[in-house]
Image (cartoon, protein in one colour):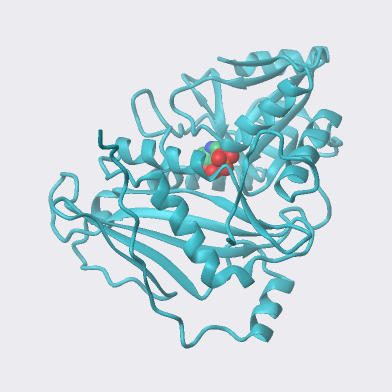
Length: 365
Ligand SMILES: Cc1ncc(COP(=O)(O)O)c(C=O)c1O
């Protein structure tokens, strides 16, 4: 009997001769911000209809050369992922549930008619980048190296069909603590003029177009003094924020989060809900109306609301502002359940407590 396996990639590694010096790197790592600086190398793998996945390379970080007719520039056939590498106290480097990001990237690929990168290649790519750029993983508390895999249609043609040539890339960017002055509740804006996704659309895929369409409502949120925007479906049901999922905490300890096939299934949310279940909380994934939130907040049945995602982990929501009503207050304090779930998850990610679910994957072997 033969068992089908994915052939191992034969990486071609080209070192960056202009890589930053240890002093230059340390200066960046002392204050990395988010998404501002990039490591010295990229990883990329080509795909074509006849050739499958081929030419796996580790190369110096630099501009990508694209034909002006490359399909991604016209039709947006593109997907991406986001996860982090964490440095533990003993210096080792780990990431969190990478196979879940790899599987989500495959689901996004299916929806965008892109090829599915095998999970093994996704994880191999992360290990290749850390093997060459591992020194870029910062070690200060709550810092990380943000990993950004992405895939796009690079075939040069005009016409609405799936591209026959595609590129997968991985870049990485050191990230400082998301909340520099400690975790603080945010205000969010209820978007009623715009939707993020529709039934049968691409809402569940991590594709650039979803984010492009969130920029205008996000600007509206900022004009109204809010940091994030909340989207509804059918003008009624909670969906998610522009880049995070949302969870309501009830007085009896129940956690409720929207069930929808047009939101991105967050890996942070899934993990937080598992930790809550482990503690004995009831967890419900179901449709939630904006009225349920309004009435629950008014009656005191809903005691906390938080957003969650890889970048900020867990963010308490202090206030929801809409054109004609407001829930909560900008001076709200972070809830206890929110903060203790946040702490437990980050303790696992940074290796401070036992990883009882086997979520961590070591990257520096
Ligand atoms: C639209 C959207 N929803 C939810 C999430 C949270 O997903 P995750 O927890 O996997 O980062 C993200 C962030 O990646 C996102 O962009």
